[in-house]
Image 1 (tube, helix red, strand yellow):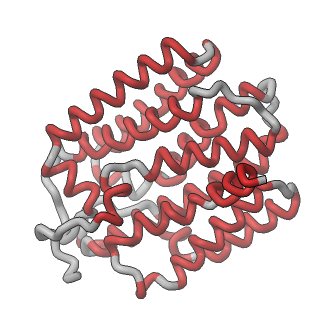
Image 2 (cartoon, helix red, strand yellow):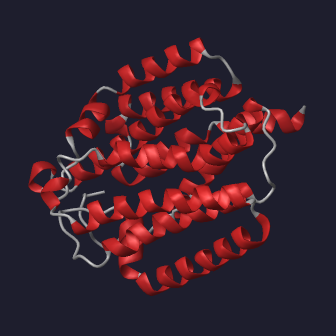
Amino acid sequence: MDGSNGDERVGWWLWLNVVNLDAPLVAVVWQLLLAGSMHVRLNAYEPWALGLAVWLIYIADHLIDTLRPAKGGWEAPRKQFFRRHWRAGLGLASGIGGALVGCGSRFLWVPTIRGGLQLSIGVVGYFSVIHLMPARWRIRWPREVVVALLFTLGTFGAVWLGNGRKATPLAVPAAIFILLCSTNCALIETWEWEAGGGFDAPDTPNWAARWIARHTGWVAGVIVCLAVSNPSEFAMAGVMSALGLWLLAAKRTAIGIRLVSPVADLALCTPLVMLAGEWLR
């Protein structure tokens, strides 16, 4: 690939990432694994609501991006897709939003709905900073860490409620998940920014994201230490994902830029191994 922004065909292996289905998959599988580790019984519709909410947020983010012209020498396939097919994206977002409202109003427990609405305030605040504030704020504001925090709150919320609002048992799993999500976002944002021209490109990632992208091994080491301090299936999956992200960083030059986001998200799908093992037992 020449790194240009041309009309490159999107392979079938990229479509999960292009239409943003990998993010809700990651949220749901970690929620299910966490609930199992904490012995919390979820409402059967809570994973569906979480997946729909995450999917809607990611699509909305890309649709808002289309309101500004493309900049830089390269743009990720998922962003190109919504720029070219924004009407289809708007229709998809409307359908997801309708399904989410229907699911929430009919099947979710009131505390879950209340928590989701409260978290949506944080999401709106994040969108306001990212899309309305001057571009120079991006390099000063730890966007990737904020995304990781919001993603963790959404994924852990129903389990926290089901666990009697006890935060202490969730502290180490939450720290592991925040570090994983921050590393995932940092790798994707930093490498795609570099592909777009580095400091000559717009939307420079903040210093925290660039530091994490350069020191993935250190982050993986912290996750291993946390997992050793509080062993569980959740922690084991966290270690597997951390090692996957570290391996991705180590093999960076061998992976095409179009594959960075799909592979980084794939590294966060390790709970599928644990969940499959439980189902087979």
